[in-house]
Image (cartoon, rainbow, N blue to C red; front, side, top):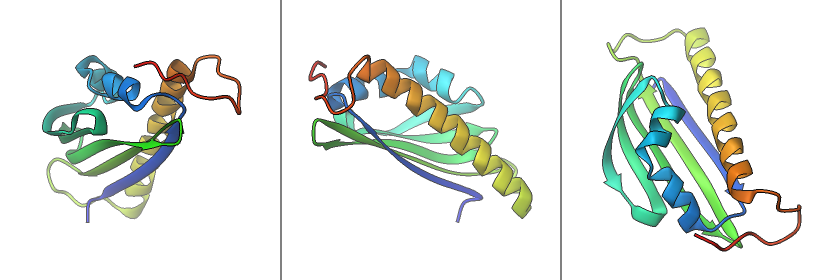
Length: 129
């Protein structure tokens, strides 16, 4: 089991293709994970991407885009260990996991704002993209 095993699911009221277009942009990856070096090992097109991670941690990360209702659930997985294999203490793991979870939520909420725009709650998603 990896030292950091993070799972998140966020609904975005936007066309899955519009989400996939952003997720496939390498410039976004550098913005989202500046301390990671990423190598795509599974490009699932409109369904997302899986990467190998190196840098501050080593392991894998994935974004899976699941069409749901008038948008999609963006599933995020991060499974990483320290690069030198040194086990982390419980406090260090909790601190690192919490920091990664908070950073991801900031990313995905910005993405929601970008894609949902000024959509009023309870109204349909934009189907463009």
